[in-house]
Image (cartoon, rainbow, N blue to C red; front, side, top):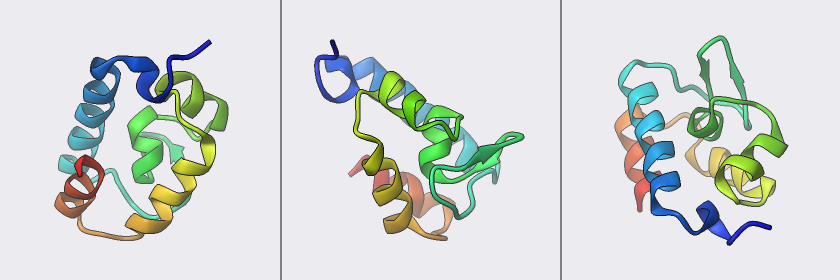
Length: 88
């Protein structure tokens, strides 16, 4: 059983944000809803490098609907805005 968001481990969050920062810097983030394919996709997909809802929950300890809400809120924002929006 999970300990809640990020499995109660700040490193899980930091690792996910590091992945997202790198994907943003590399220009791999675009629109979509929990989408990831061939190293490109949505912000939520970039956090886990997957399009799989169960992977979102397994890796981050978050409900899948949050991935879709996050991607809807971010839309097609510029990469620096994506990271800033997710970090706040």
